[in-house]
Every structure is written in C-alpha cells, then in structure tokens.
Length: 193
Ligand SMILES: [Zn+2]
Image (cartoon, rainbow, N blue to C red; front, top):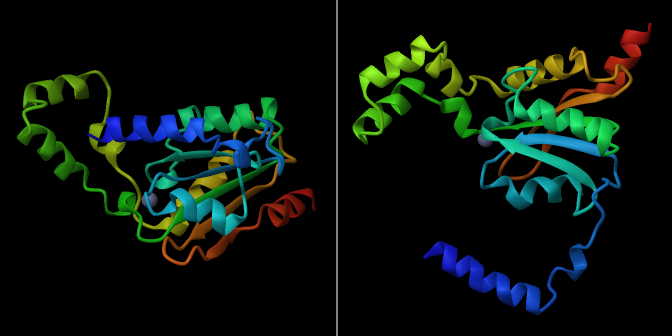
C-alpha cells in the first residue's frame, strides 16, 4: 500500500515541520533551468552533484531528458523558466547507462498487445491519425549525440533569447561525475565573432 505509506509519512512530516530546512521562493536563486532524466538513481544524486538545493533551480525531468520537439512540454517549461521564472542559463544533462538509450519501441508495443491494452486494429487507427508510435516511444542511441541534439534544438529555438547560454552535459549515475559536451559560454562567444 504505497499510497497509504506515503500519506502517513506525509502527515508526520508536516506535523514535525520537517519542511522548514527546505523553505524557498519560487524564483530560482541560481537563475538556472535544468533538463534531465527521470532515472530513479538521479533523484537526489543529480542535485547533490550540481550543488543545487530547493530554491536554486528549475528542474524538468522526463525519460532520457530528451526534448522531443520544439513545442513539446519540456520546451514549454524551459520557455516559461526563461521568461517568467528568471532562469538565465540552461543546462541540458543526459546520463550514462540511461534506460531510454536501450528503448525498444517494437518490444514496448508488443507488451501493450500482450497485456490486452491495445489491438492491431487500434494501432492502425493511431497510425492513421498521424502518430508514429515507434518514433514517439523511441529514446536515443548515444547520450552525447542526444545532448548535442538537445542543445542545438534549444539554441536555435525561435523563442529562446540568443544571449542565453545553453550548456550540454552528461552525468554518471553512479559517481555523479559530470562531463562537458557543450560549453554554452564558448558557443555564445563563437557566435559573436
Ligand atoms: Zn535515463
């Protein structure tokens, strides 16, 4: 009964005022927005490894930290962070050994069929409606390539100001070590020259 467990813990949490050390405002102190993966190993490791705490940053997470298209919900959150929530720098952080890099859309679709959730007829109808389900379910092959593609997409986005640095990094989900893929300051300098 996970829900019950969480609710019971939560009641005690609030009663004991355990939230007090985490009190913060909604504007990020470090004026940054982070896009990364929903991987369970990164829940605490990622912010610890970056030294960000409650109140420091906006953090957006999904499967793989992938920005699927210029007008998906990740991009909407990034744009909102930049214009309305005082984020001046963008950090796109992929990670090694990501589940999304081993994604197998055909296998996932087979599981949907096996569980009786869908049928080949429904799949045809979805395809007919213009949705490429395999593409939609696909993660990525190589994390450096994904990170570079994310950086390119954000940097060239028509609604992202040209003076906002867009950094690309890869984190190790075991040690928290960061590797720099794209230095957003350097890229800005090169564009100005
Ligand atoms: Zn991942």
